[in-house]
Image (tube, rainbow, N blue to C red; front, side, top):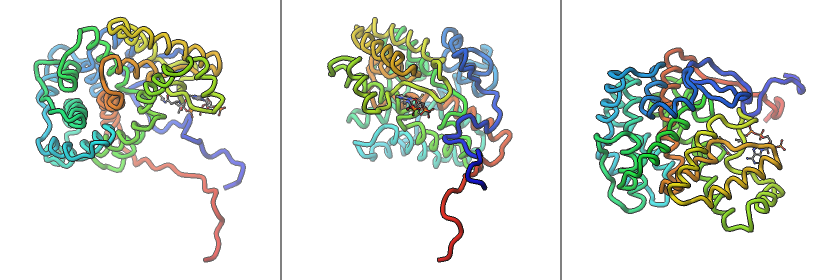
Length: 368
Ligand SMILES: CC(C)(COP(=O)(O)OP(=O)(O)OC[C@H]1O[C@@H](n2cnc3c(N)ncnc32)[C@H](O)[C@@H]1OP(=O)(O)O)[C@@H](O)C(=O)NCCC(=O)NCCS
């Protein structure tokens, strides 16, 4: 290998590793399509359950397909008592992302997953159980009793009930459901790549999702929605967003919720999420937070020409819905489970072991 060749791409930027029919981004048009449908249109016309079906099945469901899908999802919301008891033993200061990752790893050892190679049914089971697990991790950590899932409620309503013991106004539930649609899928991002790589070894579904959760946790990926809220709180108690930002940039800080590997002109999902965020601010009397957030964004765009990503409006939205900050990334997990599972099914349908190579720049051969 010569010293000056161009044989590697740091961070795999621009590397096409496989084909997919699940989603497509058109960065120059700032748009995102799930199986050919514009995601903004899906937000305006569909529920998260319909979109999860679309991702797993290639098409939107008709009425009877949707009914059957929802019945199956509702039938699998309960989690085994052994899992619930194990969550009670997790360290109380553990981050819920670590708790959820451990819970999915535990679930993979339960007989209903161990003894089944039906990954489509397994995917619906994971979609159904993930909100129950996230809510249980949250309540147990807070010293509260977990609330059992309720089959009379939609996935989003049920999550609010299991987490906060109340279901908010329809518009708030709608904003939450829309956020799940926006978070559900996004191509070969880091966690999806890892999920596909894991199952490419013919490891199992829960192993793929466990790896993906571990990958999503980092603040350069899913963890950014939490980091955004911590940042906005810091800005709130500073001398103002412009001064705070100038100082942060001077100190070479990464501004959370800004920038994206794929979108350099702006994130396709931001306009819909910002609409939800602004509605939530109106409903919950939080207009000051939005003013501060808008000022920070204006200054960042003017100074660096770097635009917000989905996590920027999503962080404060979950905050205004009443969730604790460390639950924001686990909520992202609930949504992205749909995309991860779709990718795992696609990978296994036409599998080849994922095994990239590296450019060696270490010592040449030498004697001991
Ligand atoms: C998402 C992210 C990891 C993309 O990384 P990437 O594709 O490797 O981007 P690059 O590091 O090539 O960025 C290009 C330039 O913009 C700068 N930049 C990118 N995002 C930035 C941010 N959020 N704050 C400050 N500067 C940023 C980089 O420092 C780099 O500047 P340089 O050329 O002077 O070194 C990066 O934008 C980031 O860290 N954002 C904050 C975390 C975040 O919101 N993550 C969620 C992503 S959905």
